[in-house]
Picture (cartoon, rainbow, N blue to C red):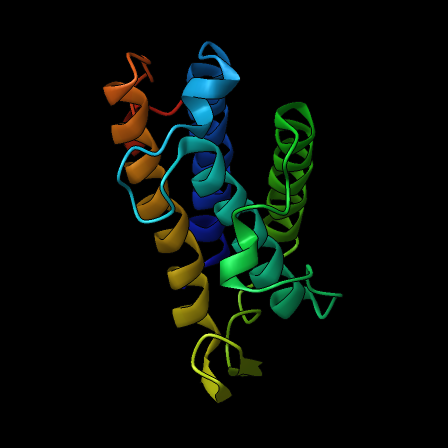
Length: 165
């Protein structure tokens, strides 16, 4: 996996978060928190989970302190909408900065950690984990996109080839 791919995905991640947050911003807080039948129930809770998970992965990639809580708590760690938006923007800037600092050999080798999700030590190739990192975001943003559409929100295009340079 080349740094250029990771850099593109980091920018795509930021672009799509801006897209979905802008659409969600046009909804009422009640609409954002409404149970819409998704895995994490609401738009707000799902966006909170994505931000938490991004923090967990970036802590692993950058050997930093991980966010508190686990998957169950991830949906309520950012209760304030404006605070969630601000933290999302800061995380996206950090992800882009991290990606821009990668070198050709940065994703060689393995990464090891204790996984709370599976309750055991895990070791995997770094490039697979970075792939998972971006795939996880995309997966849950797809759920948010569906919930926004259900709520009458209008997110813009999501195709990566339409991303502005």
